[in-house]
Image (tube, rainbow, N blue to C red; front, side, top):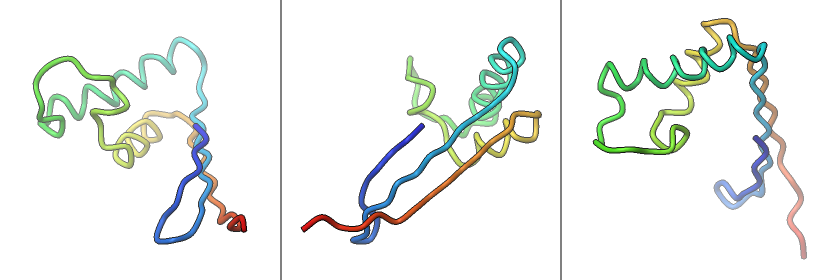
Amino acid sequence: MEATGEIKGRREKLIISLEHDGYEGTAVATVGCILQLLDGAIKSPGVHVMGHALDPERYMQDVKRMGMIVSRTAETLSLRS
């Protein structure tokens, strides 16, 4: 994921990548969501886009614990005139 936005008046760029083999990586990503669903961290009922329903910080910790390689890079960008 690559995102650019403003945090506390500064332009920031954040790049996050998750890396694992195809089959196991799919399972790990799904289990990361199910863990939050089962312990009640995802509270609203209904169908949701997975990435919008979870706590992203916890999700990255959980999938990393299950063997996924998580890379995170942040940089401050200059403001345009």
